[in-house]
Length: 239
Length: 239
DNA sequence: CATATAAGGTTATCAGACAACCGTACAAGA
DNA sequence: TCTTGTACGGTTGTCTGATAACCTTATATG
Image (cartoon, rainbow over all chains, first blue to last red; front, top):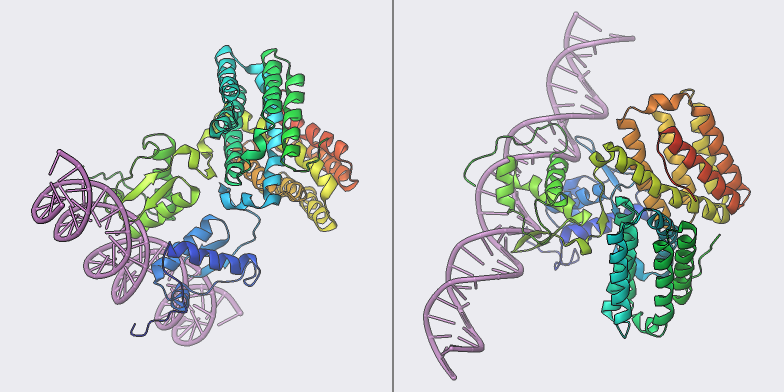
């Protein structure tokens, strides 16, 4: 390759990822129709000005995300966007207000159910963990980083008390994404002034769980989360 | 590590995926601790008896799923659990009856909420997709493979009608895992005889969504899923 | 007309090399 | 002693070229 073409891809960071993103855009924006065949690896390599290895890695990434399917000896094809397999949430997506609201909305029924189950199934050690998180929350005079960590720990403790590993897995995952997004948005400031009401809500959840009253626990959790949504200026339907 | 491991990898289909699965198991089962460094690509290639390209593609896949992070010039590391951006469920776990029940229990509140939101937000094209899935379900005279696919499509269509991408993401993910587990357990036989009642339940969900009645849609979905759980001999609390 | 075979194209895998980058050890200087 | 600069080895990232496995299509053969 004697002449170097600088109109191509800027170097700098993870070539395959950027090429995958570019091809992925071609697909999701419809310039490559579902079912249509992608250019061959050789051709893609030449058009992007990279080697075939990079193109292969990019296509592998798209295949993982379920955007393309490859058939040996035939080619790579764009698939329906419908069935993707790896449950992955890009943290960047949550900077979008719509997406943040959507994830919060998904969280609500899960946490409500978890509160009810925790009321039924918790054992003393788990209640102790809940109290511990609550203490850390109360101890923090300001709603600092530590307060957020404690809040996360509280909800994880509730989820653990369900004795259902998947509630812990999913709620921990979602709640962590949400609190990271809140942190990234520097929205902690607005939370400081409402720390008391938040703590009070947590306490009432804790008490309902401790008294083994699933209905009351669900109500308390619902009240807490809808309130939290409102404080974040999210409008969420509730039934 | 002087001795060569000849229990290597069976050829046959998609080498990188199987190697990724194997390494992923090492990580998620804790034999490689979070933050720990993976063996070098050269070493992995030699131990698995494949070329470095295959190992690289496998690691790229794991990086996509968020299980490892790579740093050029240093190595590949298992990610700390907090930073994982993907949620992984080993299909093998669901052969355990307890775990299967737990995942099903998690699914219920999500689907109920989704039914209510779908009733509020669906547009005609989405209702058409629901009807399409329903038609495929009715058309299959027996509860064959196609019937299961149609069932999955139905629940995905409901989730899509919420206009909340995360409901589609999570419900699609969970429902697919569950239907795969049912399929693997050869439990389809017991489903054949109850196909009529199942279809009737789906129809009532569809009708409630179509009439934009969220409360009725939630009730219909709750009735359907608790019924399905009972038919699978799962005991699940409901409030 | 049906079937077998050959040809060409495409992805999958392999092998080896160089580039970019990182961490560390070590020497030189203050 | 402490700091700083530098050389070195190791690791991932990328490139190149070749071979194997596989599919599609066209052609030959009966």
